[in-house]
Image 1 (cartoon, rainbow over the protein chains, first blue to last red):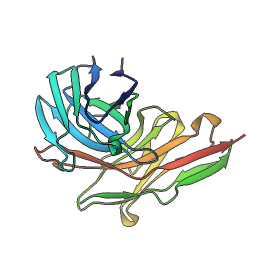
Image 2 (cartoon, each protein chain N blue to C red):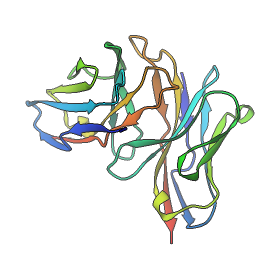
Image 3 (cartoon, rainbow over the protein chains, first blue to last red):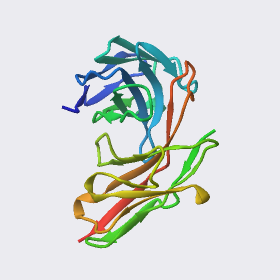
Length: 114
Length: 118
């Protein structure tokens, strides 16, 4: 089973809302990732959790907050988002943090910020 | 900093014809190179990857890619395209320690949209 699941599939939120995106994998992977993908653009890495250690893309604003409750679960907490944050948010996981470990992607959550 | 260029935004080929998608990278050290495919509204699927060794890499779905260090290229090829290959294709390069906190960073090219004519 090489499945990464993401919920919800679609999310619409206002700029004052607080919401969370959820990602789950049961492959025993120890690295999990959040990517943001705007329409007609490539994915951009936001965060990586590997062996419970967080690495950050410094360009990501603080209104995005990742959380890794355990090695199978990854959340992305959203607060005070802007309309330009509307995008497809992709989760991925890999066995380890090396590039030799294939990243498996989920189908994404389509986020719309009004 | 690493970067990836995919010069072709759109490519249209006839079903059964051969395909080559271009990718040029910029990276100081030996690169980790990848090709991913994304169908509409879907996540990404890894087609193949190159780290070292044989410069011709075989992947899934009949795809292959050739690493040419002298040209800084990693072009994706398929001898005979099927209608189901229509999708967005991304080339990516990996840089170790590219993130705050020491994590590895995968940088994607802008993608090539493949259309297949029946």
